[in-house]
Length: 240
Image 1 (cartoon, rainbow, N blue to C red):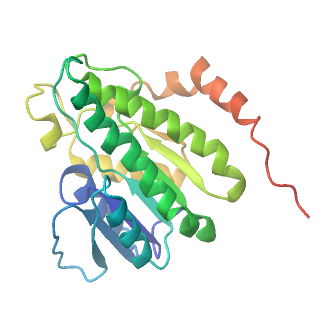
Image 2: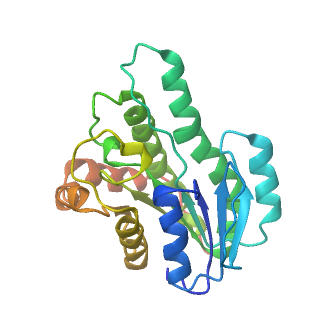
Image 3: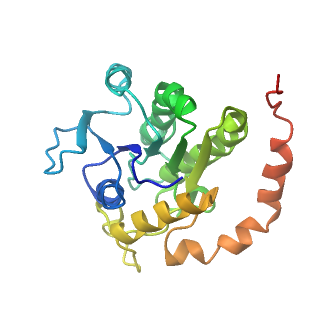
């Protein structure tokens, strides 16, 4: 997929990687970019259409889906990340509500449009889906679940012409990583790499130097091979 002339929806579009994804899509010639945010958003480019979209609100998701006429690319980027130590069940539930069930709900709502367009889904799931930082375990658990869901959707939707990508982002210089004193990539560079990988048809996207260092090992590893083998169990539509 090339972004030029396409319609894109980005959740969590008000800051960080989400904001950078909106700008990158515009720079690549997107015809329209829906920017999903919890708070009102103003943008100088007339191609940007703000959507009030809290991914934990069924009513807002339904209203947003009803207002979008067509869609080529859905980027599930909205997420939360907070410090915890797994002693508070509420913290885990909050992360799952946004990072897993929010992604699921938005995907289900917009899936008919993506099937109609032969479009694609990108879920921003983080490298913590593969290995957690023990100081943010609830976040890592939610992202691991979201990655597994992404892999399942990839197999289940292939026969309907919808491609499903996972962006396994490493440390990025956003509000979420404030307090982590480690090297970080810029949101703009991550957004650019994500769209480059979509153009190249990469299923699992490693869009920064830290995550790119494990890409070869992931693609040649046993877990990826098992995913490929297991996908064969999904019945595909037969030609008439």
